[in-house]
Length: 510
Ligand SMILES: [Mg+2]
Image (cartoon, rainbow, N blue to C red; front, side):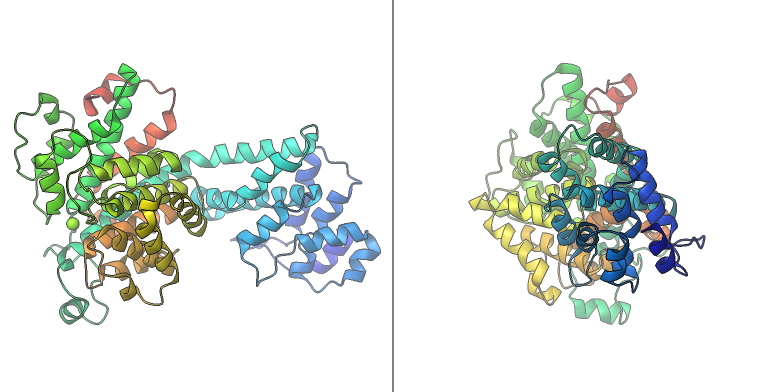
């Protein structure tokens, strides 16, 4: 099989800067299997050498059969990705085949490619590529025997690579998500209350393509990102409190963070304890700006006495736009639950609450390295369990099938803003700029749809996908970066992190 592979891959090259002959890849896959302890005479090694032959060359079945067996040919066919089959479906067919050798070759193939992608496209891309094939890894537990040491070595190698990639990748996801949301927010701010026709009339046929609010070309966040920052601050303080005191009502701590935000809006919070004024975020003077905040949030916080659900029937988008940090710091199911709880602090309508939960969950799946489609599938599946999430679920489904963005509404309410964010991200999954500009150039709540789209596309593509001038000219870049890095540090240290005095000063656990 090795000779057949050398013959047919001759003249083909690997993608990348160096023009490496393609044969280095099947060779690396075969060597990986050998390193895991597979016998050099086993069919798996033949399959490793031949695994791309049918996909990428004009070799015939008969030629493969002449040097191997029907089993080897059938397994290579199983590993051959037909263009008409969605990639994830293809991986699930392999995972569900109970074919040990197909499993091993595909694991080795993914690991080898992920290592190459690491050098070529960075840790975030390699991390996502590795996790696109999570179904393989999961299937191993179900059908492969524990005493098969080659399989166990494959699983260990997967885990090692995941561990090596995770730290950098998740830091990039967290920074990308929060800075991306801030950039989208700042881009949309000056056109929030304009129709699309008015935007085009004022800014030309492409509408807004850069920060246009201030003469110096800078951009500035609005209430969406301000509240996102305080959500993150609340999570960090809840964590510190839990570490130090062993008990914590996180919803209460986040509510106090929102009261700090309320103070930045110039609204007195009455006889609040001193600690409402503590921490570093409340001392950032640039947050003391009235940037068209949602009146539901203002009123609900002003009136609230405890962290109980708000006594109103609002489903404004003020929930979705602020909960991304929850998805960056909790596992998906917990993110849904806590996303709902934090939404309920200001919004009483079930859709306002569940749309916030759904968005936190979506971000949590992206943070775990899942693709956008898989993250949406899983979020939908979760929502199916709850009757009060029906409107949110319907909006997500509509976002995935709509022919035009105007079908999704204007984004003033939670499920519409979520749908528009998802729609724009699906239209431009690998193009932060195009997706966010689509989201802000609408008739509707441009800063919130820009912020939500920016959260999603920033989480998928990382910080460097945000145009450089949108970062350098963002007035609150330092603050958003600082919060992002602290959220990431929290995730990295969990569950054994100990709280330093520095952390206690920054995020007093109260
Ligand atoms: Mg706003």
